[in-house]
Image (cartoon, rainbow, N blue to C red; front, side):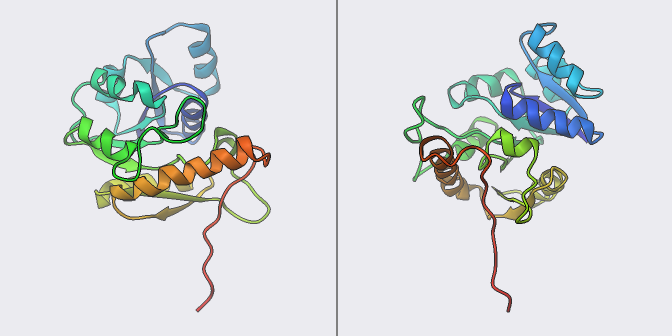
Amino acid sequence: MKIGIIGSGNVGGTLGTRWAKNGHGVMFATREAGSAKMTKLLASAPGAGSGTAEAVARVSDVLLLAIPWSAAEEALKSAGDLSGKIIIDAINPVLPDLSGLAIGTTSSAGEMVASWTPGAKVVKALNTVGYYVMADPTFAQGPVTMLYCGDDADAKKAVAPLIAELGFDPLDAGPLTQARLLEPFAMLWISLAMKQGYGRDIAFRFIRRAG
């Protein structure tokens, strides 16, 4: 699959590199082609390339959105017409001091992304753990649950295997409005990891009683 990565920081870099190593055609959107940072990232992601957001979007089947919330709308506009594209929204609209969310309860970042990209198929996913866990979601207790949601059934069917091949247990949480719950859930992870002293190597599992 051809996967475009909008955001080459910790999350975008980690996921893009892992998908590239799994054999997908990965391209990173960048305004700094040839920079030391991008050169290093491309060296770690076999076969990956880079280009402008518009060029990356044009050749990609799926786009991962993994940039700060404050830059999301501008980045999506710079990518051009995204009609028909699957967008995996991994953004959490956190405040700069990590004290809470900039948007929530009556809307979500996922829904805002959908409103900015008419015709695109937005799937909220890969936002409920940090990049440490994304790099290696192996836990002795079993696979980490990765909740995802969206309004397009075919888009979710395409995204679920991309989540699973990373080592997560994908779980469909319903329509895109469920992002109003997944983003605060991510805030809980951030609070436990960063403020309550549990560290970044933590994650959640969905379990069900037999019968």
